[in-house]
Length: 341
Image 1 (cartoon, one colour):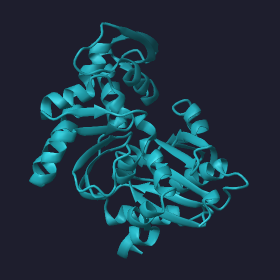
Image 2 (image 1 turned 180 degrees about the vertical axis):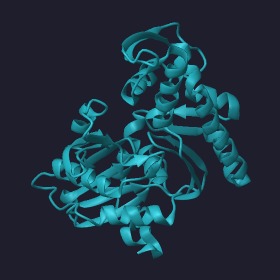
Image 3 (image 1 turned 45 degrees about the vertical axis):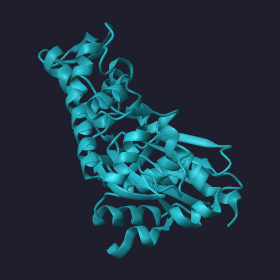
Image 4 (image 1 turned 90 degrees about the vertical axis):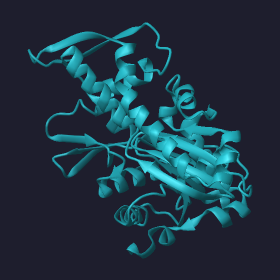
């Protein structure tokens, strides 16, 4: 297999990351589409994000993955095909693709992913890598070590909790909770407490700039929206305390799910995890104080990692360049779909 034509794709619910095996190119764009009158695609990726929540009534702009589940397979195929084509160069046309895939998903979703990836991507061959394994490889973990490790990927649409040993996922759970759920909680809080309607873009900005767990700074931000009573544009000062309190319930649900996973973990692997700690990846892991909060609740060391958003795609690069890892950690698209095709 020619590595000149090999690319890794981290297919996230909020953003899609693509790189080549030499990491000379890197693309990260929003996983979003804009369609006029249900038939005419007018924007994809970051261009669609620019008009998200600003579009006229006859334009739909949204994510194909909602609440952690693939809701619009055809739209997802269009976005992915567009980004792969945009990334392609003379050396990467019709590439071999290594794509991350969640483990704990239904047979219906597996079939949907199969249809997307086997459609119009123009790929020569497609190999699948479980998301937890890609993260582990991106963290530099040895793939032949029998010790147990836990990785919690806090993404945009879902959170994936994985217990890994010897390059295999021993336990895995996907929660339909992630950054988009936090955005909804923040928007709901602003509506109730400040009588202001805001969109998910504004809510995401508040989350990224104001949210924290534990020690909350005394600061605020002015935002604009539509007043719930008058229906007129209005501005309000939103405190960091209000934003941080709004996300607490969802963070507690995620922490409780991690605790439940630890209770299900075999004793030998649990002892390893208690020594090595839990590693957080994904964009939500960047909320200040989150690792500290989870560590306090779980009584196990919890660590942030460097550049958590790109951890999965870094792992794909490592796998693509290592023949032994390619042989043991990857499986074909048909194997991923199983008996659903």
